View 1 (tube, rainbow, N blue to C red):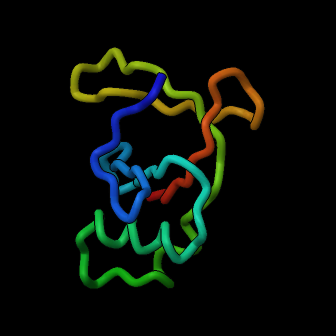
View 2: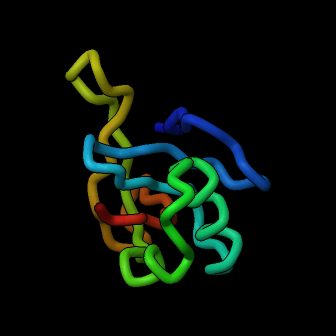
Length: 93
């Protein structure tokens, strides 16, 4: 499944995931670029790059359609190389 993201910022497809402010970007990106994207989408002027850095991880996930009509997809952690696994960068809430 090719997930629909909320925005494309600086060439990075990104979306909120969950209700607590967590975000997910498709792909693995240089730290400075992905932090800038998360800061832009998050829209909280009090949060700094230093605040986000410890909460960012590069992972792999498989996307499936979510049965809940309030969500378009679910990302399930998967090992690199698993069928359908995509590189993702996650800002954990």
